[in-house]
Amino acid sequence: MKTLHFDCFAGISGDMTLGALVDLGVDTRLLYRELDKLDLSGWSIDFVKEERCGITGTRAVVNIDNDDSAPHTRHGCGQHGHGGENHGHCRAWRDIRALIEKSGLNIGAKERSLSIFSRVAAAEAEVHGVPVDEVSFHEVGALDSIIDIVGNAVCLDMLKPDRITSSEIELGGGVVKCAHGILPVPAPATLKLCEGLPVRTGGFNKEMTTPTGAAILAASVDEFVTSAVFKHIKTAYGVGSRKLDRPNVLAVSWREERLGAALPSAGVRIHEELTVIETNIDDMTGEALGFLMDRLFEAGALDVTFTSCMMKRSRPGVIVSVLCPNESLILLRRVIFERSSTIGFRETTVRRVSLPREQSKIRCGEDEAEVKTVFLDEKMRRSKIEYRDRERLARERGLSLDEAEEIIKREYGSP
Image (cartoon, rainbow, N blue to C red; front, top):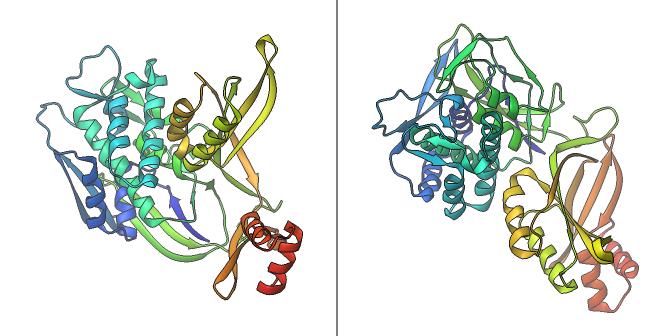
């Protein structure tokens, strides 16, 4: 299992992450080609090798054409405005969302971009007490954030790790100057984005984790770990802009983990935070509900279930429950509104605990069957041939599912 690990001993920001992922091996030509699909002008990125306290890495410098005389800061709290304030030309979150949605980005990069950006917007909305769609970003800060966030989403989509882990997050200390005055570190938006994540403060007397950096971790990390068993493959560094008395770098590593080796003693694996979307429906046909289920799975749902219920006025109905990763949440919301009759739904954040599993294939000639194997405490718990392969053989030969499974085991080799 190939794992991408973030070591945030000096915090994390969008540009540090971008530099680290390029330092790890992302092709900058392909990155530029993908970012060009946003159809935005007025920006460029320079990737330069720099050293901090003896550690050499890559610094990502996002250059923005700035006609505004106001100074530009890279930290999130200095870039965001909110309803009722006059900060010149701004981009609202709803406009940025539409820009990303209509772009030609790959679906994986698009969904991760929306997931990261939506977290930043939601945090800013709560801090400033405005509706999330009204959250606005100063023109320079908006373009800077778009390139940072989409660039990192593109890089992660290119690298395609099996899973992503992180250390605890250094937030820093002291104060930070932003558009709303002088605020203590961590800034309110950063604190909001780090809710439920392992953090520490005081290692530096500066702001070390920005809202963008926190949002990248919140949207992408499968598990925060303090220890692990793995084979180290490669480490790269993203360099921060400031020169401090300690290395201002973000370390990212490729690790090869053996199934079960890094699990807690209970033999289970804790996955990323997931979201359950639920809505009650009493005016859709069975055919329409089946069509909805197919569309939800296509949009990234991990599981979809229908439960019968009795609704008001004694009408029979169905509870539609959708389990989804947070990076697919925005797209699934749209599918529910567009493909069902509901006018609203409930969302609940959950953590899923599951056993590690491995997908493999067994072959016989030109045919093959997929097998799912589950592990507990590094030992194989059970192995099962996927239903679609058993069903296909049973239909072709006029057999029961059990008879088809026995034939697959006999002819292809028992999994």
